[in-house]
Amino acid sequence: MARTELRGKGERHGRGAPRWGRAAAMLLAFAAMVAFAVVLAKLTLEPSAASEPMTHSNLRPGDSIRDYLAQPAFRDTLKQLGGNVLLGVPFGVLLPVLVPRARGLVRVAVVTAVVMLLVELVQGALITGRAFDVDDVLLNTSGALLGYLLLGRRLGRAVHPRRHHWWHRFTGGPATPPAER
Image 1: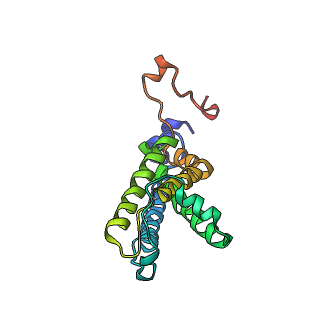
Image 2 (image 1 turned 120 degrees about the vertical axis):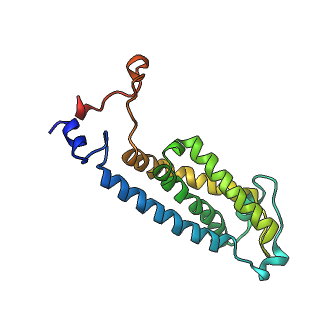
Image 3 (image 1 turned 90 degrees about the horizontal axis):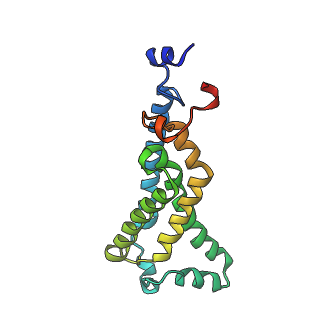
């Protein structure tokens, strides 16, 4: 069946997944992002009165990371550093699916850094027992980049394939995939 026939029946929209598949993927990604937002808020925005005497803000990149690496308790180091990296991974996986314009390594990094910077600012200003730490932003952003490179890029392209615009005829833009030649 020709591509135009499929599109006419509503089965496919351009190249890539069928319309219902895209809608299902977007809905699933949205639900996952909402669940992630709840977990993020619970982990980062709950007061911790017991931690208040130990909290201090960190405005110098690398200071907290060096402190954690220098301590003898490897489990705490892994929990802090690994946890912050893992906390950023869902951004790298889900953002390209939910927001096609946010695809790309730099865009994912910028969006993640801005969101995590806002979380850290709220932590430092409003939450008891929490403090602003620039290293958390760096580790979260690294996790988002890791998630994007491992899975997010592929998922984003599967749900939102690159479009072939009229000007690609003149600029040598995206070629037609081999399956459609």
